Image (cartoon, rainbow, N blue to C red):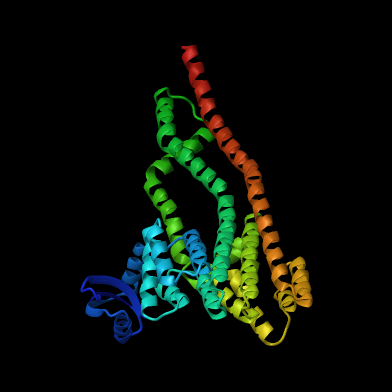
Length: 403
């Protein structure tokens, strides 16, 4: 698939310019002919430039897509044809990215594609929405499937939001402490040291250590600032490597407290998705196959990758969970009960709710866990500054008094 930036003329003779991915130029010609458009010019772009332009165009946020699905489900339930519903949705959209995505869907519908195919061709809708739309089209229950997809996206965003909120407080605290420490080392301590030297005050070992630290900060602060900026950038780039991402996700999975939040959010998302797909009539093996591509934690995805082959070999889902050695005993028992009683969808939904509530509880507990650690760090740093500065100050005052 190559990125093509092309210009064309529509039926009204208006010039249009678009970016798209195509396996061959013939595919672009075919798509344009379906819309009654004529190719004028095109340009091949490298993958890097193509992805950059695509990112600048922007993708709708999950909650925007959820709102779109909810609105569209109301139109479909009311018997309004899709083109009119999409036209209204595009007009009422509050963001250009969502409006552009809806316009692209309308264009694909005019070309003879279905709603789910149009969503897929835009490249801006999650797999779950595309899959649920396709199921709705095939079953004749599109309104319900769109509504269920919207509810799933909202629930997933709640799970992600809870996990992110848990990380905000410690991250913000560390940044503030680091900034305050850097300010003292580069601006305050050097002035005090100049005063000590002018007064010829005898310096203690703690003060000498503080002076050395201050000189190091003043000499290398640009490099240290560059390292601080480079760490998150390097982390993002490194996580594009599959092996590094699996290793880093494994480390996050095993961290105390934070690891439990990661585990709970992944489990909640996993069960919520399976419940949704299974309730929509998707075969459990197909649901697991799709799920494999949507799990964000690659270590978790790797560990559950064997479930699909286990089920295809005739094993029950509960037995596959047990063999995986990743799912808690409660999860295995509830899934087993669901399979035996025929209410697997309900059991999976309950498990999603259980794990989501655990994540919420951990989010509330984490600040209480972090606060004592931060107080110890701040207290230790404050005590060091007091010892390093107050001794020489006391000696300086004594010398002045003696004079």
